[in-house]
Image (tube, rainbow, N blue to C red; front, side):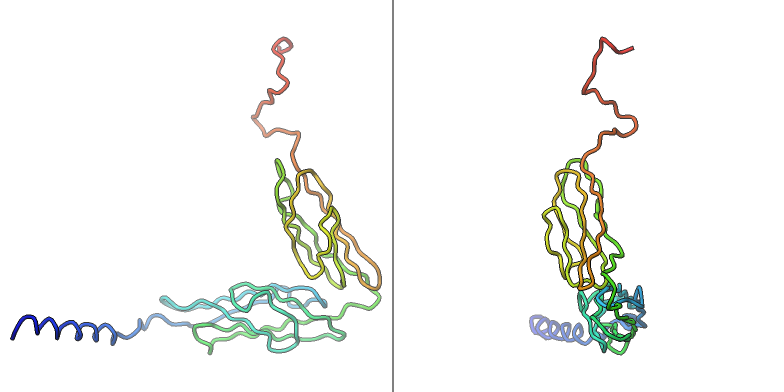
Length: 219
């Protein structure tokens, strides 16, 4: 047989062999696990949702999230870690949230987050208010973050302004400041402060300050 004809026959046969190769049987999803922290929260507050897909080989580890019942919102519908924000409720409400494997939808985990109403006579509760970093050598940006329950409006002084609906905000600082977060509802306001320090008068151990060196007085 002519060698050129042999080449023509060989190439499509080789290509067909490649297409027909089955997937690696070791690539498979075996399970999914998920947690909500905390699992009981007041109206308007948040819970951290985490999920992990397990398997063997080069399996798809992507997680899809959805709220089955109870309301509220998710920071993202995809990812190993997302944040759930509870709705405002008047009675204790169980919220069902499902984590599902994107690679195999038969693997799911349903979480229950219990949302409780905030008492009508209560002022807002500021669980935390922080700045990261809290100390800067020469100024820069810091991330202000907070966790507040029962507020209808939020604001921060030092020209930051209204932050209603947010849980963090990056701000620029050039001098040391004390930031005050104010949370307000129809029953009143609650406040919490956090100090951000810019610059320091102290030197790290082992560093000599020669800015005022006077050889005449050195002993």
